[in-house]
Image (tube, rainbow, N blue to C red; front, side):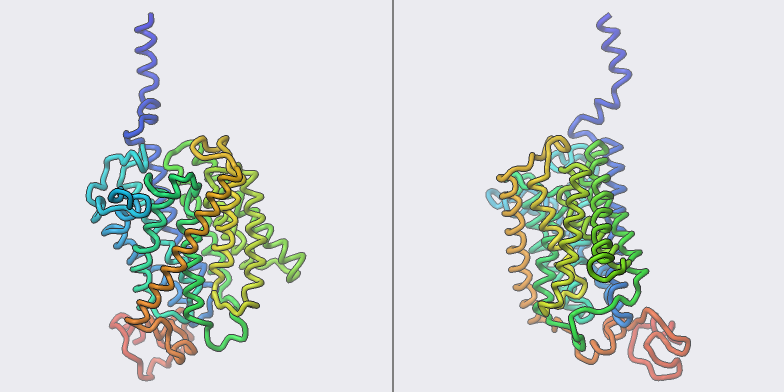
Amino acid sequence: MRKLLALALALVAPATALAAAPGTVDSGDTALVLVSAGLVLLMTPGLAFFYGGLVRAKNVVHTMILSLACMALVGVLWGLVSYSLAFAPGPGALDRFVGGLGFAGLRGVGGEVAKDLAPTVPHGAFMLFQAMFAVITPALISGAIVERVRVKAFLLFVAVWSVVVYTPVAHWVWAPGGWLRQLGALDFAGGTVVHINAAAAALVFAIVLGRRRGLRVPTVLPHNVPFAILGAGLLWFGWLGFNGGSALAANGLAATAFANTFFAPAAASLAWGLAELFFFHGKMSGVGLASGAVAGLVAVTPAAGFVTPLASMGLGAVAGLASLLAVRVRPRLGLDDALDVFAVHGVAATLGALLTGVLATRAVNPDGADGSLRLLGVQLLGVAATYAWSGGLSYGILRLVALVTPLRSDEQDEWSGLDIAESGERAYLNADESAFGQRPDAPRPHAPELHRATAE
């Protein structure tokens, strides 16, 4: 009788046993991570639309190119060396701070499981998922410096920054030997690694570049609100994979992270919109609702897999109001963080990381921790270390790049718009204009053959 019962159980539950075995590829977990990688990839074009809608019409193409260029440049660097430095075991005691070159050129990164990184997902799927985080992080920085930065300088900065700054922070937080992970710091999907890291660099970059020319105050009206709303929608959609996929398994934790990624930005958007309506402008703006949603998404990123949906609503509402206040204060400081990268990503991510230390509960994630003063202290240490690392090194990298090429565009190019000066393209044409802002029969500046043919 016992043998029959054992046989029946073996026939009924082989899939369950297989799914739970660490070191074995689980098809459901793999599907979640691969789909989530696609969702996170969509976020960078979504960011391009969001940022592109917020700038002036003469700079929209240039602004969007900065995001798309990160997809190309950082993607290549990730495969060559960055993934290895972020997640390969480092040599000896250095493993606490940076990875080694064991995965350089994606050597050994394929269909097998990397047990220490993702126990039931192919190593290649995990690597690809993490690549999308690396791609969007420097793209976030671009929002602070649009309408005046040179593409060449930005690319040189990103090439160095993504390797020297981003990869060590990713290693600190997510690699098994990283010092913040060893201390018990919680960052489910990148509050410190992505948002604080980018916000610190954005703030430094904006200060070094200085204010845009011709502005009475360091702010401008968005030229295309529908673009900004579309971009925010794409970001919110992709963020479901950003946070939900970070569970690395198709399970209840992923479901909670997905739910938190809806409720937190919903509460943040509502709080921002209602504050505008009743306390500031007497109107509820589309850009405000979109910005509030982004603030909520940023805030819940470190907490998505550690807090309850109800807690995520409170976190989102607080982050939305805090970011709105930061956006309103920033122009009075004379700081030209053009699209308020620090006010939204820096402020909301800092709140999210710190409140994770208060709101986290093992009832949501047994592998996490319960909120406590100790955990809050560890979270504060992670936030401070990331700000210091990213801010300090970003300043040094900018000084090095400035020795190679000017960081800022020429005055005339800035007045006429960087679309023509930096890309030879325009987003919008009048009936009697070519792509270069001239009549079709007027002499045209030098441009690639594709643009010349288009103008003709």
